[in-house]
Amino acid sequence: PTKIPTKIPTKIPTKIPTKSPTKTPTNEPTRKPTTPSCFTVQTYNSIDSDIESLKNGIAKSSTRSHWLGGIVRLAAHDFMDFDQNDARNPMGPDGCFDADHPGNAGLPQDIWCSTCILTLLYQEKYSYLSRADFWIASANAIIRQTSVDNALDLRDTFLWGREDVDSCPGQGDRLPTPTGCGSIEHIMMRNMGLSWKDIVALLGAHTLGRGHNEFSGHKGTWVDTNADAQVFDKQYYEEIFLNAWRPRKRSRSNQDWTTGRASDPGNTRLMLNTDICLVHDIDDNLPCCTSPGRKYSDGQDHCIDNDAARRRCPMYGSTHSRREARDAVEEMLGGEFPNDNNVPFYNAFEEAWRKATTVGQENLSPLAESCEPL
Image (tube, rainbow, N blue to C red; front, top):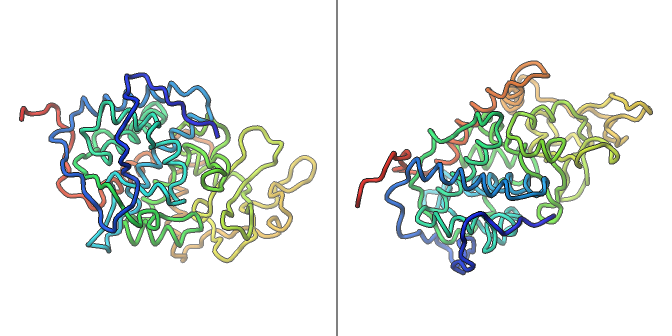
């Protein structure tokens, strides 16, 4: 993939501290000794403005979508390692990820590194804030700017005061894997304490960005085009229902799902097991296709794969333990298709994001209008 350009529209030092917050040389978290005394509305708006300048400075559409999704992913990987059952080391949003863990691949290469434009912005203007607070504020900026009519503004629910750690051994092992809903249930329900509706809303962020073979072994976008992959809306949920998804790379560790023909316009399409399993019971039902029976003009089934086309992936029934997930996906659709109603998704995402970004945190504060002199 094309690398993110390193030039940003503000004066940036050419050197930053070489000590990496992402390495894991010790067995205990080492907390950053100080936290800022104040985080104002003006600072939050300044971060939003700077993020927009960086975004607009990325010319290539596919590179821009990768960067947008990467910032939201950075914030998410910082909070998804939280485990409410580990009182000694719960982790959570603490400004730390394991750069060497494959689950974080792509972040230390393109999003948070010594030459990455987001890191340089932080070092130049916002290093008095915790990384954890800065990452979430930056993700909030991306979400607002890419939501339809800038409708999803998370400023009023933003809280600050998270403390950074400089090492987080085992962080990557706590992240959900793309193998299926069992991983989601363990990490996001058991460890983080979220509901299925919260989880479904958070996974809607897959509408931004793309998968890269180089990093994750999964290639493609969750939505049709690079332009679509820069809009934070409900299209992710529509894609799950509207397309004939078939397994790709079966029996391999990076098995995922795709749809359409290679000759179709737009991008190679991607869904992970953790996306398809929100609606379809795929635990013991592969190979299958989510919507067999529809035909191209030449008679070929939309499922393409003949083995998958023989079996429809079953949807969760009324008594299944994951029926709440399917119901939540249907709710996010906003009514009968087609429609432009993003309100159910935006409302659910705002609540889920508030929960996820504050897990395990105490004594967080809302933004201040101004800072009192010290």
